[in-house]
Amino acid sequence: KFKCCFGGDPLPTIVWSHNDSRIPEILAAGGSTSAQYQTHKLHELYYLDVGPVSARDNGQIKCTIMNRYGREEAIAQIIVVASASEATPCITQPLSDITIVEGRPLKLSCCIFGLQVSVNWFHNGKLISSTTQSKTDYNGENAIFTLSRCMRTDVGNVDCLVKNRFGEARTSCRIEVANDPEFDR
Image 1 (spheres, rainbow, N blue to C red):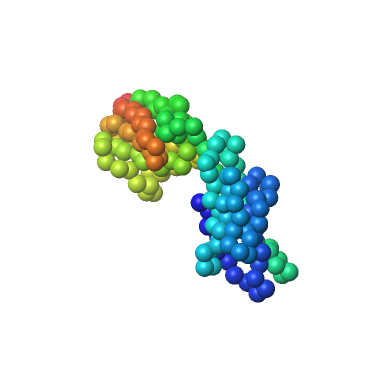
Image 2: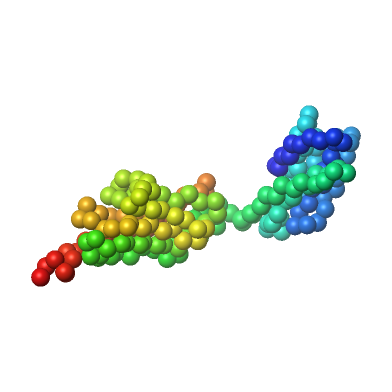
C-alpha cells in the first residue's frame, strides 16, 4: 500500500505509475480498480494498493502530482522475493582471522547479500559504536569495520550481525595484536 498526501491551489491531479507506465488515474468518485491495482482517496490521502504481487512488480512506483504551476514526484521501490528464505540476508564473503601489529590501523570487511538490512558489529559480545577511533559502515554490499589504531585491548572476537525482517546472518573472526617489531629491538 502506497500513500500520498498533498495540497495546492488549484488542487493538483495525481498520476500513479509503475516503472514509468501509467496506472489508471484516481477517479473523482472514489477510485478505480483493476486486477492488480486499486486506487482510492480517503479524506486528503490518496492510496495505491498493489496485489497480489509477483516478480514482475519489482521496480519503481511513482506518485506524480501536477497543476498549472508545476509538478512534484515521490518515488518508492518495490522489491518482490519468491519466499522469505530468499530474502533472508546471507554473508557471501565472511570475515577472516587477523593478526595486526599494535598501533597500526585495522580494516575488517565482509560482503553481504540482503534486502533492507541493518548491520551491527560486536567486540567480545559488546555492541561497537562508531567513535573517533572506530568506524562502522555499510554501503549496500560491504559491511566495514575500521580502527584507526589497534591496541592490546582490541584482542578478541569480532562479529558482524546482519538482520532484516526475514532473518539474520552472522560472520566472526579473531583479532590478535602483535608487538611492534621496532620496539622489540
